[in-house]
Image (cartoon, rainbow, N blue to C red):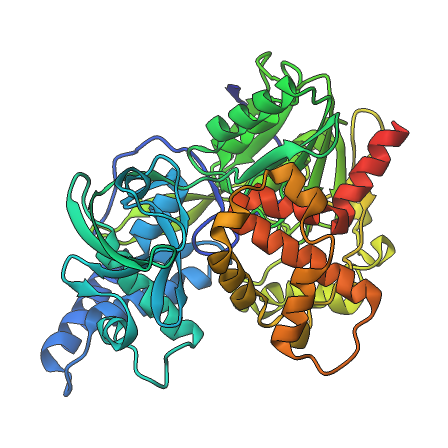
Length: 541
């Protein structure tokens, strides 16, 4: 990707980061910190000193300062955020695409830590840990029953609540993670052999994948899902792209639904894969009028083939950079619903105590010059935070005609397509939200519990399945879905359509346990209206 600087007139625009953890992060060069002593800084320091030394009660001034920083940033824009030191390491690991640990995913089952997935090539697989093992002890930490609740500081009233589960999960992670090349002695119960087993595990680097799935939808259409734009995403994407091309892919479905963003330079690299040399991908502008432009190169690996990009109301930030670059260059087809509407670019700045701020330092614009940032209020973000509810109420999740556009923010692509700025990217082909697949708690509420027990009781038999055969033939007799209906004791009739939807989702969850995210997506794609729309469009083309 080539980068050129130029001064441009100011376009109406801004952009946003979604959530505290992930957004559009510019790959800034480190600059020397410049600080000046002024009366405002002296005032804050003096106030903290007064509270520390003179206030009538003991006060946690660190917590007070954290709250003050959060409040201060909230009056700038919705995506300039403070990251406390307790959160920064976890967020950094997610965005760097790796952490140090033993390499397992787990869930709590009957007050016991049950291994739901052993990461391939990780320390636990090398040591001999298997899916379904119950981790009882890690070094001297007991990780089951009341012991784990006590370790997490969770009382009986808080147990099994969201906050309680989070605390328990954090306590387990703290016991299992550590420094590289350190040993943790793990004791597990293995149900298949009814034995207590001990494993010394050497902690090591474990990948956090951001491209969890890729496969062939049919003989010509490939599918790649990107969860976020982390530091490792481009490498993961290229591996997936080349693998699918080797299987005969001529059309690609790029799934950015629910992707909240990430590193801008990674998004630019992925957009570059689809665009011809010299095509503008995106440009940014800061308050000093400095403009950075990013162009495609001649290195793209999928410049001449069809591409479909799936987006929805939770596709934000770097996802919108990729989508906007393709739409504004008349490349590919955007399928789905209006995206989030985020266009502000943040730089992470260290505060010196293990915490940091992500401060908005520039705005980005798509190739036609539009900002897709939705409006926000510097003093009150209530309406901004309720945007999804507003979309439900105004009907735009069901009808493209309900999407409000501003004719003053109308732009035209090189081939004459009309696009709009000011609030997300409107897809070329609209697909409404599917209201027929309503997951009632009565029908679906105990599905995860049933799936875990079913897989746990049938691991040996299930291990003989191959993914494609499983998708095509598992539970064709309805024995498993009928067992689930008996399990929940529904006491009411269920329509054939509702039962079929339940069966597909049940199969998908079991497939996820056996084959990962690809298994789930392949098993449920017949219920995915956006993928079905892509198949329809590709056949027409």
